[in-house]
Length: 276
Image (cartoon, rainbow, N blue to C red):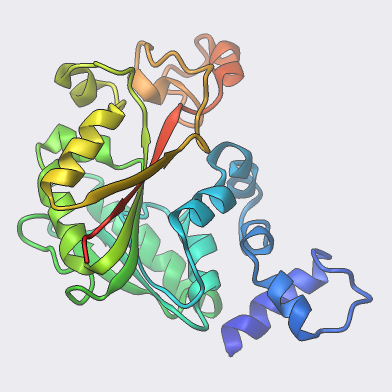
């Protein structure tokens, strides 16, 4: 396929695979591994630099991503994870990107959607097989054919839904898109246990217990948690909430070295299943 030829050639040229190796099936497997794609030439240096903080390979493996899956990525923003997922499933699977609706009341939604659409259309060799859907409960909730997806994933979005008072509606939307036995993967900034709703509505941090509670209300079964994205240096108490830390640095240069040393937020990584 064109996408495979394009990416394989680019990765070979940049030396991710030994340039003296024959282009055999085992080398193709290496080219299309999550590790090779996450460090591929189609990704910017700044995006690749965040691999150490976001642990995409371990995270996607924990969620059980396979090349032949039908996958829904929920609110991909600029497409940081899309850059990895899309090439990985291009040949054998299917990717739905459930992005903002152009009809959303959020001031930044249309701009974010437009940027993502431009990224996809300007790089058809990599993203041409993505189907973009819109998510805006309760108005737009068909993010994939009902009960068709093997895996749905969302990265650092739950706090936004809590702020909008729509967290349950979102989880119900994912539930409808997944087939029985399908998996939902959630990564979210982690609040200290026992944190109240005011904290979750204002700081960007959410407790694991509350995410599990909402998912179970929507019908999901909790499967497992992982500390892949944990950061014990994050104390979660900052003047501008989670956005104080990198990469946002909402306070500008104020105590920037201190926040750089802390690193990106402490994050929960949770896996749920839609019952058979």
